[in-house]
Amino acid sequence: MPEPQIRYVRSSDGTRIAVYMIDESRERPPFIYVPVVGGIGSANEWESPDVQSGLARIGERRPVLWFDPRGTGLSDRDVTDFSLDAWTADLDAVVRHASERSVDLCVRSFSGPIGMAYAARNPGRVHRLILWSSIIAGRDFRTPPVWRVTAPLAELDLDFFVRVRFLHAYGWTETGRRLAEAAKGSITREAMNASWAAARAFDASEQLAEVRCPTLVVHHAGNEWVPVETARRIAATVPDARLVTVNRVSSDWPGPLQEEPEESARIMLDFLDEDAPTGTTAALPEGTAVIFFADIVDSTGHTERMGDAAFRSQAREVDRHLRAIIREHGGAVVEGKVMGDGVMAVFRSTARAIECGIAGHDATLGSELQLRIGLHAGDVIREEGNVFGGAVNIAARISALSAPGEVLVSDIVRGLARTSAGVVFDDRGEHALKGVADAQRVYAVRTGVEG
Image 1 (cartoon, rainbow, N blue to C red):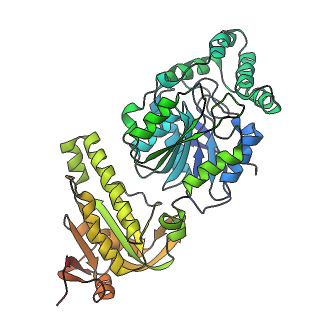
Image 2: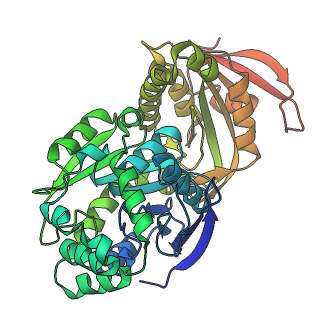
Image 3: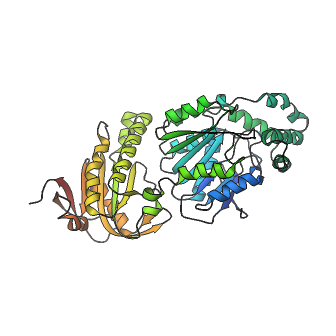
């Protein structure tokens, strides 16, 4: 694996977090491998040849980042706050360093609640989420008997205790000895005890149902640390989740890359890349495209009236149906664009884009929510799973002009689709759009045959 670059980011409370990055490819969203938090953590996990091999495999198509948890490794040691909110803020700082748009996350064990909470609180920032042998709350973790027996060693000789823990986790192998040696001095006794107590109090039960991104739940068969019932509960609660069970080999540590790294990397890449042909960079055009914007009308007002949980639940269903409709009509969702409660897509055909706009309002059937949809056509520039250009800005402004339940299009789209879309275009006049020099004439789409 290439030597990683080391950078520092500051969390919201000022804590400096050491971030390691391999940046050889920009083809897909950055991949953040979140370390296990609580106790001795895994600040030196990257010393494992298997982990290096797996991360290098994943890094063939995307930037790869990992970091030392607060209180360990090269991150600031003099910290006292090890709460779920603090660790989630650390992850947010790393995500923002990695990309202005969306990232992929892999979390496991006690880091699971951090990934769940972050994805739930930041819809659109997490492209795909992998939960590997993850807990939902601290009570889900079953402490191995050997941990209870060896716990008093921490008060007698911390370095010896750390070596025993790593050798138990990874076995009396060269890798186990190497990691145990590297872990010495990686954390103080006070930080270890405080972080372990905080992690045991984690509870992301309420955030779990709010995770909107596609999620892969992986469970090691026979894993005694986290019961399979926890994995099943995650998969049943997250709306767009699937469960995969993999066989364990030798390690007692339920991690994704400690054993059979090539197979683990394949499982993750199959999931992370499954939308590449139609949903991200591979399908995004360079040059002329039809740009589609859809946004939930008055999301702030709905949140006030319905409450956060009810609004997020309905918004998640609308988002899922709308994305399916876009795919059915040959469009590509621009995953790199953080849209809040909206979706951006691009099409090759104006007629298909208009058909999608009309069908898109079906996504809100049975919901209190409605969409605003706007279309424009023009040249775009493709970059890092995203598209840019003046045409994109115009499409967004047109979407903001549209009435609830309406599809509004620019004069260019009307001209291209006038004889092929099989709809009527009602002239809505010229409008001055913010940030656009020339006024734009827009039309509302009405089903029927233009006479």
